[in-house]
Length: 334
Ligand SMILES: [Zn+2]
Image (cartoon, rainbow, N blue to C red; front, side, top):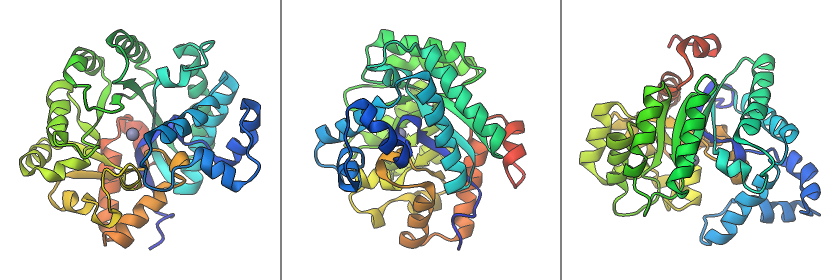
C-alpha cells in the first residue's frame, strides 16, 4: 500500500519539537551551537534510540526550544511545520499543540500574546497555501506552580477563537489531575476541546490516571493512554465513554513506555473497540514522520489499509477543529 498517499490526520504533534533538520542546521550557529557534521546534529538534536538517560534527553528538548527566539522565527518555524505535515505526510487535518510557558522560557521579551500571534501568522500562511485545516491546542505544564497554570488557562480562554483545545502535559507521576480540575472545567465551558497527556509511562497507576483525566478534567481525548491495556476494566470504561486515544508508537518505544515496538498494544486496543488514532508526537526530535507510524502499524502489527483508514476517520471526526472547516479539506464525509 502507498502509505504516503493516504490523506491523514494528526491530532498529537508538539509544535516546538517538529523543527525541520535543514532549518536547525541553518539557525543553530546563531544560538552558539556548532554542527560541523551529521553526527554532531544527531547527537545534539535527535533521539533515535530508546532513552535511558533523562538528562541528555531534556537537553535535546532545550536545544530545539532555543530556536523559538523571535516572532519572525516562530512564524517561520510554524509555517514549515505545517508545510512538512502537508508535503511529507499528506496531512489534511493538523492539530499542533504548544506550551506558551515552554516557548517563552529564555525568551522573556516575548509575551504569550506575541508568541501566539506569530504562530497564527505561520498557520494562516500555510492554510492559504495548502489544502489543510490547522488547529492549535494550548498546553498547561503539570510541573508548573498552580498560579502559572491558571494564567495559561486564562490565556487559552481569552484566545478561544484561535485555540481549539486545552491539554495538560509533562510527567504525571506526583502531579495529580485533581488540582487542575477547575481550570479544565472553565475551558470546557468556554468551548475548548479537552485532551490530556495520561497513561503514558509504564507505572502501576497509569490506567487509573487515565480514568482520573476523564472524570476530573473532562477529557474526551487522551494523549497516549497506551498503558490502559494493562487494565481490562479501564479499557472497558474508555470504550464505553467513546474516549479517543492519541497513540504514538515510536514515541512510546523511544521513551520505553512500550519496550518492544512489535508488542505495541495499538492493534489490541483498536480491536477491543476503542477509538484509536495514529500520531507522531515529536517528529523533529524523533527523526520520524507520520508515514513512519502508519508503516509500523501495517508492517509490524499487521494492520490492514482499511483498519488504518478507519483510525484516520476516527481522528478526523475527533479533531477539535470545526466540522465545517474540516470537511472542506477531508475527502470523505464526516
Ligand atoms: Zn505529547
